[in-house]
Amino acid sequence: MTVLTPSSFPASQRIPEQVSFDRKELGIILGLYGRMVAAGEWRDYGISSLTEVAVFSVFRRTAERPLYRIEKRPRLRHRQGLYSVIGLDGQILKRGHDLKTVLRVLERKLIRAVK
Image (cartoon, rainbow, N blue to C red; front, side, top):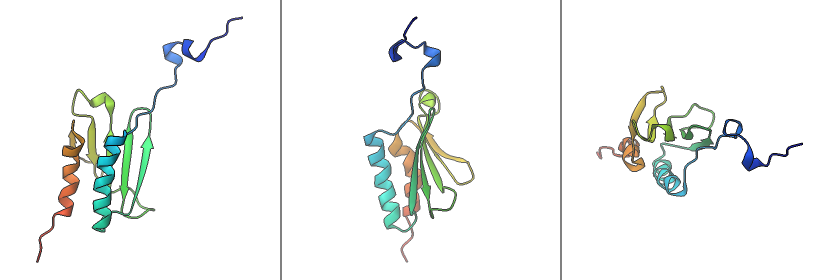
């Protein structure tokens, strides 16, 4: 009888790792989230860590569909970019390699004309 330890499982039977945001990325995202909550634009968020993508979803109200999704897809890091911002209708608003640059598309919502 052969006993296999967890480290000796064949590569095809390994459980895939989850993709998640690291501490620095979450700090950047939550900084923007805090500013948008203070402005009264956003009210809730959700975080999902899946096998191919990590998603930070932003909601105006809890029971709605997300206004924006901030996604991290490691497979696209050599192509379009690791990060993307997706709107309510599924349209990709911005994609790139630098999280701060990608999130600028959402910061424009804070800039308003003063009357």
